[in-house]
Length: 101
Image (cartoon, rainbow, N blue to C red):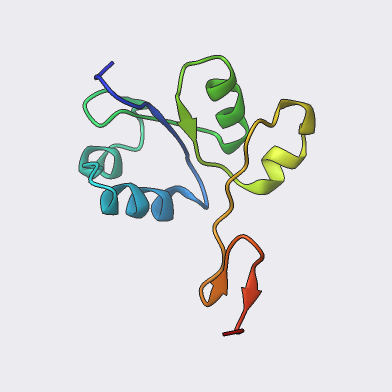
């Protein structure tokens, strides 16, 4: 593995948005986008998997951080450590006050 963080990235509905976010953070996700069969991308520090597997990879240290849907985390509340949520556009986290000054 490369020095630095390993990020667990879910395949499926969150995949493209997650890679866009990682691009904005400075990670090169070109290889991840172009290879839908490979799971481990050591140079980028990314491992891809089913969304339901993300908490397991993080819990067991195979990934340092992971991105997955809140529904996956709510299925196993005893395994949650920290949940960071992203507010919808126009909302103010963490209260998610939408459209208020």
